[in-house]
Each structure stands twice: as structure tokens, then as C-alpha cells.
Length: 169
Image (cartoon, rainbow, N blue to C red; front, top):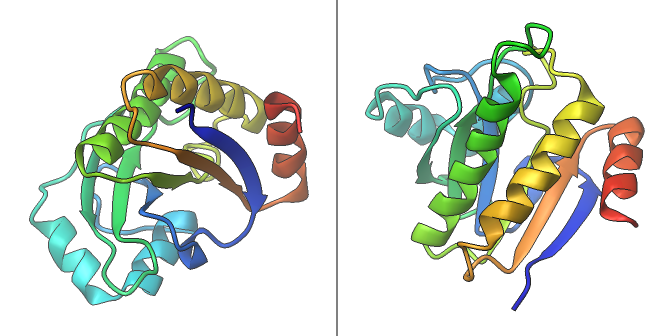
């Protein structure tokens, strides 16, 4: 079965999926934007669990429980800070997405929702980041037959239009 990829403009903390992805910083201890929203909505148990993970490398991800969220798991992905595109940003962003898909497969997640990793405080250009996301997730799904649904969850109409264009919807 081929996974269904879609885009939705929504608050990622409200989605009832098996896993939501947190656009985290390398400490995994919360921050602004999506990261802060997920930590607030999940409650203090998420921070406590993240403290035991001892951070995460850029381009990788780690998984926790969903705590007070409707999602069963939170996958904390650390994307790169944008430095103009010539310092390995694309490869590290693609790696973060691929690691999330692999973790979803490993933990029996059939559905996963991604925010636009690295496009907020890390300043990755939205259109370039979306292209990397769609391509990396598509490739990673070949090794993740249990993942049936992927939602790119966006915050703005501009991001919605970018993903619709890339997904042909």
C-alpha cells in the first residue's frame, strides 16, 4: 500500500494521529513556535521525558510519548539553521524528515503529521524546505510500509499553497 500524502492548515497539537513531529531545537527542552506550542499542549510530562533524552543532533530525531496530546507520540526532529544553503542544510533537513519516517515505522505509527521543519526561527526558506520535505518523505516511505498517512501540517495560507503545488492538489 502506498502512503497517502496530504496538506492541511491546522494546529498540529490538535491532530489525532499516531505521531506528530516537533520542529525542535537540539536541547529538546522546548522553545518558541511549534516547539513551544507542542510542549505547552502536551503538559509537563513531555519536558520531563525530553530531559532524559539528552538532546538530539541536527538532522536527526528522537521519539517520546504524546502525553496530553491527542497524538500517541511526538517525534522531535532537529533541522538545520539556514546559512544560505551551501553548508549542508539540504542534506541535514532531508535526514531529519527521513529519520522521523523511520521512527514512525519502528514504533508502529500508521499516521504522522509534519510541521514545516526549520522554516521558523531557523530561517530556512519555506518553498525550498517544502521541496526537501516532500522529496525526503517520499523516499523514506519506500522503507516504511507501515506508514499509511502523511500530513504536512502548515500554519499559513502561503505554506498551504506551496505544499498543494508540490503535491499536485
